[in-house]
Image (tube, rainbow, N blue to C red):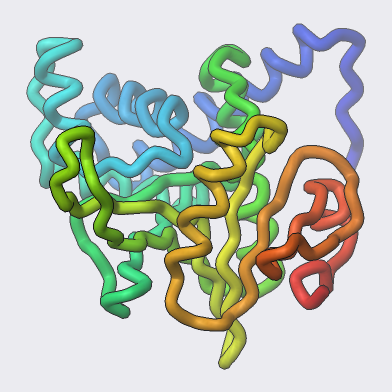
Amino acid sequence: MGSVSFQSERQKADYLKNIFANVYLKDVIERNKIQNVDEIGILVDVLASAIGVPTNPSKIANTFASERQMTYTNKTISKHIDHLTDAFLISKASRYDIKGRKYIGANLKYYFTGLGLRNARLNFRQQEPTHIMENIVYNELLIRGYNVDVGVVDIFDKDKEDKRVRKQLEVDFVVNQGNQRYYIQVAYDMTSEEKQTQEFNSLRNIPDSFKKIVIVNGSKKPWRNDEGFVIMGMKYFLLNANSLEF
């Protein structure tokens, strides 16, 4: 099979956009005899804009109704998302209540199996580093054979009026394989104290002793902080197949 050579970044971008629209998406539409061609195209854009953001068909339907004045039912959206998943264009991550040890069915997170195709679909806008890092880590974990969910930890805190309130903290990934489990946070920038508190607080409130890992931008080798959390650079994580075993 011959290779394709491009002379410019524009040619590369055009190629990716063309292959997404005229090969992958066209195949999904024809294979599943989809009539809502415009709608599923916009649905792909909505999902591409919201990688790593909890959502569900009802929220997406409301977006179509309020922002685009289009009727696109929950049932149809759910079916079309399943078609995109079956075609390996996107992947779903379920939300898991860590303390309650149960799945939460309301919202899911969606990730793209090919970030180049996702970026091309959005004309290379919305390059949010943390969400893109999160998508890359998610894909790599699946490649390594792990089952990957999104974690939720319920805690009780006090509000400004000193009243006891319930809060929900998020753990980016709950990663399982056999009897192994890892909790993983992904953070592009950990320089501020506020960001460190945000990333570590979820891990602090997990009531078990499975390994807790924070993957940050860069190539740092893994090390443990005073709380026993493993911190490692993204490059190290990707280049070392056994990086979670540190």
